[in-house]
Amino acid sequence: MTALPKPLHKSSKLANVCYDIRGPVLQKARQMEDEGQHIIKLNIGNVAAFGFHPPDEIVQDMIRNMPDLVTAGYTDSKGLFAPRRAVVHYTQQQGIAGVTVDDVYLGNGVSELIVFALNALLEPGDEVLIPMPDYPLYTAAVGLSGGTPVHYLCDEGADWMPALDDLRSKITPRTKAMVVINPNNPTGAVYSKAMLLELIEIARQHQLVVMVDEIYDKVLYDDAVHVPMASLADDVLFLTFNGLSKNYRACGYRSGWMVVSGQKAHARDYIEGLNMLCSMRLCANTPGQLAIQTALGGYQSIKDLVAPFGRLTRQRNLAYDMLTQIPGVSVVKPKGALYMFPRLDPKIYPVSNDQELAFELLSQEKVLIVQGTGFNWKDPDHFRMVFLPGSDDLAEALQRLERFLFGYRKR
Ligand code: PLP
Image 1: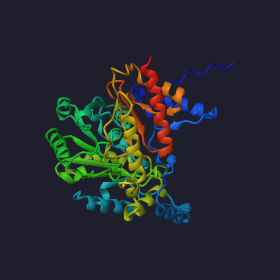
Image 2: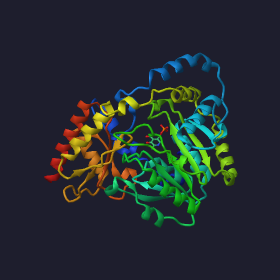
Image 3: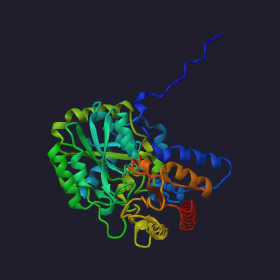
Image 4: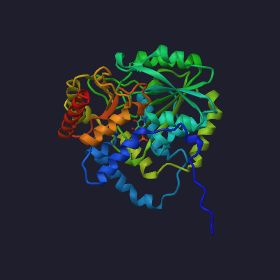
């Protein structure tokens, strides 16, 4: 008789790794969908699911490239030359100095490159400053790399700008890097040049690597202007992340890039580590790489959608207007990206477990949001929603939210 197999446990490396955007509430929603229920999803920035498709030119070029791709092999582990050259041109337009093709890494989405960047950098116990609320991949990837995520506060009262005193107070001799997400997920904040210069000064003083995620740099509303952070200094090491998922509505292409710029001379060994991790996964998917040069060479980004009467702007306005009419709900109007991070006044909604709140909203009203603590927010008094569904669905979801919250107040 063979012995019963020993239970397999996940590695202790995953003990502090958590990714609630795709966590238990989503599992429950999937189960409800399997049972035939229709859920309005405000949980994830998957633009394709809401009828936002990649520009035709990118799709057509992809189709034209396909016959060659049938016989294509692996590429250089940093990626093909032409799309990397296109990224260099993009950095030139952005005013980022001194970038060569060698400084550009293509990845299966930015997500992969973020994990490489942190894995190559961190020793056990090294600390990384991450905005709070965060995009949880950073916190998870720091943990997976053996490092310690340290969250610095972004101040809702100041349109979610980083609270610099809080950030400074969290720097220790173990701090290795600072993460900046601009435009921000989940708050929709867009940082001013003055704010970016302050952050750079802190990085300079403490010799921190700056990891700046600019994946929403074209998703801007009203008069917002995006300033590429790495264009503001050449004496700090920057890793800038960007890709096709949001600006070009092509998240399924899994195509992103990382640009190393600024003070590189002292970082040769780290860069060797980055190269090694890229080599270990051989290369990023080739169709996704090829789409980059078409995207960056053309005019077909997300511009029309974020113009004053563009679809995304209208939906943002609708969501903002409806949310702010609900008693006890407030929200900073996003200047960029695809998300809002509304607050539930604890005096009116005494929420002790915001995941429970998300579960209840899902069960009662079939609306899916993500609880704020899923973004490592400190209190259970926020949630994140996208404003991607069309106006009818969005209005319906927010009416249901209002009804749910009305019931919550009456408890
Ligand atoms: N960075 C931020 C701030 C994001 O919001 C997302 C996706 O929502 C990503 C990175 C992931 O990008 P990619 O699809 O290129 O992996």
